[in-house]
Image 1 (cartoon, rainbow, N blue to C red):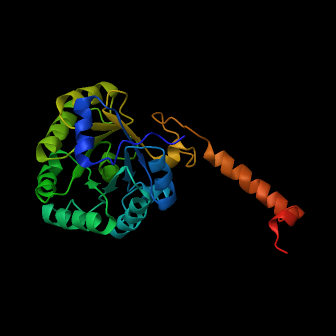
Image 2: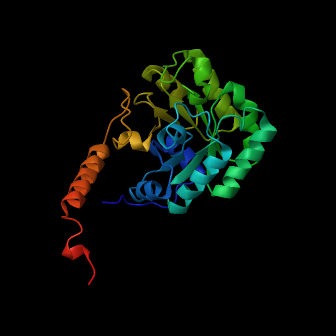
Image 3: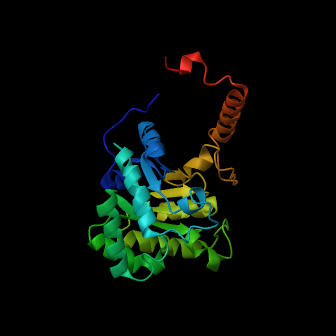
Length: 267
């Protein structure tokens, strides 16, 4: 049954949820079909993640994803959504080259997709850029901990980040620069708890334990479609098995002549 709706989720409502003690829900979507389903189910926010590089394109990392691809997928998602807050990732090298490029590229994302906000990876090292985006009236969410765009520097995906002092510095820098929320990826739960307590903006965890102000998962992982099963993931469905069973049944019916039958044929 679709969730009861309480009006459109906006950046101010999202940011205010922490003070109200309201846990936030976020999932990724990359196209019109899935975005519409998540929105109908009452999700608070949809992230058009550059994880599409792996989930949709079959690449080993997010790094090859382009700005044009994020805009393409973001626009499809926004057209399906009536209530959820849509946030679009800024892909690799669309903001690392400085605040001017970041404002220009983020402006394109909002203008061409209709999304509510952008997300970028970084804390202290991107504070100046976050401040520039905020000054340009572009809502921005930060992302610290395991940063997929830093995979080469970190030495691989899926590495837990344990430097509490650095994570606290990153979170505080992002909040002070004007971010309205921050994703915490793959950090110990007690560190995530400390970060969440230290900043006034909502923390959205993925592999960061139960003490964050909200949670995000990659939609195809949660639905059991991707085959990716990290420790932090809870699968809420096995759609991969359902789809394979359905295709096998279809193949068998076609090869045996059972489909299409008289009820599927026109006179």
